[in-house]
Image (cartoon, rainbow, N blue to C red; front, side, top):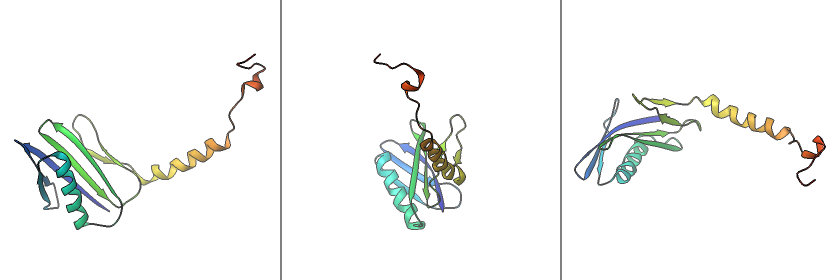
Length: 121
């Protein structure tokens, strides 16, 4: 599983990004969309071990943080407000979700007939 985090800055009409910690991936583009596409492609060339998730969050109108997660479980990542740090959800949370759905399927919904009145009486 690979996690790539980038600091993105706008200077005029150009967006530039540089990978933080443990990497030398850099890219630039005329829009945030173009920049994100280039960064995902660069991250995939470094680690192509599975599914791709990405998250883009503005910090100011001219700066942002972009994270690409490759491989791993179906858990996601988000950027919190305020100080803003990246937090990955544990894989166990994704595994617990299907179990909760199964419990809901076993319960049968109550009907108005059981209460002695109906909406149309």
